[in-house]
Image 1 (tube, rainbow, N blue to C red):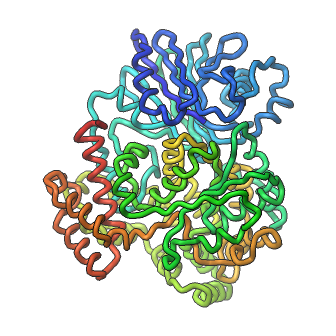
Image 2: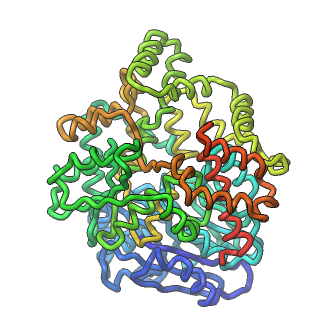
Length: 611
């Protein structure tokens, strides 16, 4: 796990070490253990290292192969590197025990086709000194990030946005990204970033740069084209998940786990302790006042002696205000709710204890974890005229859940795309009309997400357009504290077989994630296994925004001259919403938070140019 950066000039222009050093300086937190760079005329690579596998100096990057033809910079982990080293690229002589060298030899032998051999999370760049070509690629689901700026003179790329800002003279906001954030609550759902000049390489994509400077961006992996035979039994799924955990436990540094008390992270910890027992397992959790629904401490503590030490952190509104500037520095783009802060504090509590953390992220998207997936299932049953099953499932849902959210989602998903867009826009009346002029206010990729006709199609759409929206926050927060996060549920061998599973194995009798729940019988504590009140990294956001410190914080921002004149939202509407929120005439915490976070981002990154 590291930070990579690079500059490629297309014309007769040398890359200076100082340019790469400026980029590397802004992401030293991603790799505090070592740093190095490589230049060759108009090509330059920079690398900051967080040592996880083979901690020796031999693992330094940029790394060249034995004949010095190929040079690589790599961020991530190749979990099956030992198997590849033994059976696929065993003919090479190795100087290190790193997965980086295995990846480099795989590329040397197979070229870009080596991507299909890799089980892991990665973003890497390889320079071929002989052909003067460069190849850059990102993993299947976008676990490891890669951003780039492309103009007529150069390509600049990096693991984060701030390094690229050092190479751009003019920075402007991306109005389309801001609109999608305000109206659709979406970030990272396509190639856009909040900076007009910077784009994100999409998951499963690669960039090829020829010796002539021609740039080609294409997909090397599409989930819909790589689905495998579906899991037929919960036991089969459990075995595959256990194998994923075992593979991802490979590390030369301490490994811990984020533990929320929910089904996903608890399943990982339970399978870990029963199949790969260690004496010093540390878990890290966010807890709150026991009266608040976001507090899950009673479920976390059910693990008891299985865990060496449980670490708890208590995020607060006061703490959020104090940490705001650091959060903005860590994330470089606005984030749509304060759940990011809960995860941030959990990771902060782990920084001096472990170097690698397991996360349960990815289970919801592949196993129907979000409540609105019920809506997709109801829609599928109705469209297929499975009326008996439709009524059985809807009534089962009503009988087991207090919320009517899934039924509302079902009704919404049944609407034509134009009506869905209209409803979104009406709910966001505070968004300036000037912002909407000339923009795509329907956002086809977002509407495709809501318009999925079946549950399995909804899974595919989520991996295509929403998965990175969740992954991006964990990567940025973890790397801010020089930690690596790993995601056993996102092993592609799991995902490719989970999605084709019959819908009635995912949702059964009004209960979601049935495949995982059934697979954990006899392994996970029953109180956790059967609980239906999903929480995750939720915070008491609505109450925080009614607290005295946050009240003053919000009013200062909303009353500022910059907010009044920014032109993206209508200040009087925001003031009115906040007044109604304080009077408990509604919960407008998400809308208020998005607006103030956007304003703080503007001040830091646009007005002050990331000062």
